[in-house]
Length: 573
Image 1 (cartoon, rainbow, N blue to C red):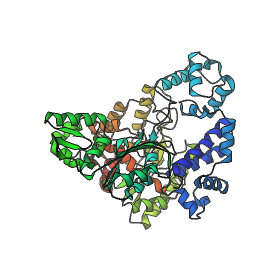
Image 2 (image 1 turned 90 degrees about the vertical axis):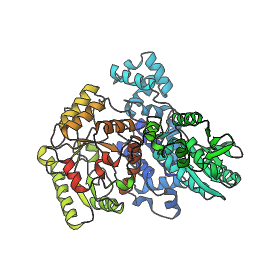
Image 3 (image 1 turned 135 degrees about the vertical axis):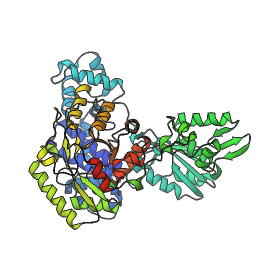
Image 4 (image 1 turned 45 degrees about the vertical axis):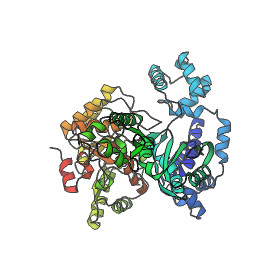
């Protein structure tokens, strides 16, 4: 089978990491990181593009040299530069980059001064108090590293939901085309839309298990068959992800899908309800003695247990069963209810497409409005907009709206919140915008009290509307900064502001727990993609998954509103 985009992106990111530690030209490092992000998020398979003879150097930001390297990887080849960098670098050194406060320069300094080339050696050096002898390492960084290691940082990471999706989609398609297959679904934490997955579970209903087992174990991306039985098998894919398969008869498919979707706590609660009725619930169905009462569909099982279907995103034993029994399950927000996207970037800063291209892509999704939120001047690496350039963009948006009645582009900005709580651009330009999205891109290390006060002071600005990616985390690489989220939410309510659920796969910020807190406080959120190219508008599905896990309904979401109502909600008194 073709090499997956995620595999190509991973190798490009490895090149960038190793070049960075080596102290290579920053522009060269940045080129590899941009390429890794682009390839990892492309909706089309790069290997298919190469096989079709398409030119990769036409992709945004990809020059001829990088295009040739990507094509080598897409054909299943190896990159000489990566092999050489791996030969020169200690094997465990890149794992240090995942720790907070350890950028490439500090990793290089640790290696040069103390020979630290792994997380284990770093832990030993911390224990011995050796880091204080290395220039640039003070008590604050020591404490941060100790805390991160105690919390499990540097250990093998779970797979991000988007990467798992890219990996499992072609596998699922292959299984569905096997002889006698009637249904096939991914279960587990993937189906519950957890932000990361440990492994993948697939449930298949088939007339006979043998053709499915054969298709599964001989799938081209399989690196190792761990176990194979008559109806179950486990494999390891080339990218290292474990996949477990279970084949069941059609009359058991719903029960099996429910069982393997979990969560474990939800399943235990359901089984106890069955026991209370004198029944037995397992992956084969719901039984009274030997008689099957239900099992063909999940809805059938839930109905027989006495309540309506519970969406997979809610199955965490966090009150969903009691809500179902009481007829108070939320009607979770759906993709069809989203009317627009309120956070995206163009090629005016660090995006890859024009205002027109982003708007047309959004219109094709059925949206009636979008907000263009390029960076403000504080983000120099993204060539952020100053007051003059933002004024020019406002005029460009007005010209677009005058000639494109099918969709409304709202003039906005992702303005930086400075350390003292001021916004990065003056009110004289902010007041000309339709809305202001504000975020933090610096001084993540501030103590909770200072970080919280920083944001609240920013919210005092009458033009502040939406607080973007509110915890600043990057899943697996950067922990959230310390901030009192309940206080922030209450402050937003008092001031007429809102928070964002960011759908970028490495962010998914707010968390599901914070989404539920927002609902309890009756604070509306915006589900946005933070898209940097048209294809990334599809990240709305990840933001929706996060919102649904947080029990959010359409009424809880700002951008389910028609434009006129949205404008009223954004208008601060």
